[in-house]
Length: 299
Image 1 (tube, rainbow, N blue to C red):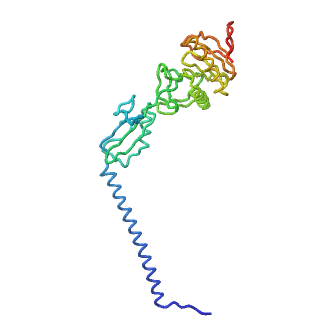
Image 2 (image 1 turned 90 degrees about the vertical axis):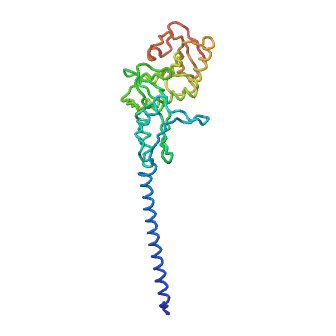
Image 3 (image 1 turned 30 degrees about the horizontal axis):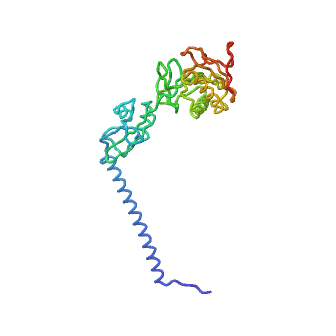
């Protein structure tokens, strides 16, 4: 068997090749280290020397024409800046955008959405969008909260734009935080009914009574009561109810009636003589008890 012996020249060539490879690796390491050091220096300069905040702007969401609104209808720019915790002279690079956004939305409950943007070299822009009270629940006063269940404030009277909730109990309600019901199932029921009402375009739901889940009731425009029964088949029940409402409004645009649509394809109607300021749970009867008046039946 032949044994191949490397010549001295071949061995020298291999050593030289290995040496060059090691030198290349060393140069790459040194270069990477220098780049890292340069990046660190640039970061420190930008964080502590350059790009300092000298202006904090507050504006609203651009409208459909692209025009920027002034900001919030509830709070001044100074209040929003103070709640943000951001200050001029601080680093534009080092700020935590998420922390600023959370501060604003928490401390200023009527700010539904806050966005923070860096505008180099030295401007911090805060974009805010208001939320509104969609629901009210009574606990001594009336706790107002929006469609995302964010608590806004407690007031003495229910605003006209709100849906008053009946038969719903609250565990805690801190402004700026999500309302906590004693039963989380309330949320699913509220969402099911309100979404179905929105889809059916039935008008303004001024009251929603969840006292009895087998006999859920709503009041439309403060005058027309719909007894829905359970929250199953809501689209069909609301369609049936709307046909009855339209027929009744042809005779009297301001009619006050109670309509039972517990049977999804049939409605029972009677006049509503309850006081306007009476609670839904008292004003709406389960039905159909008609006190001697023969109800209209609309199929």
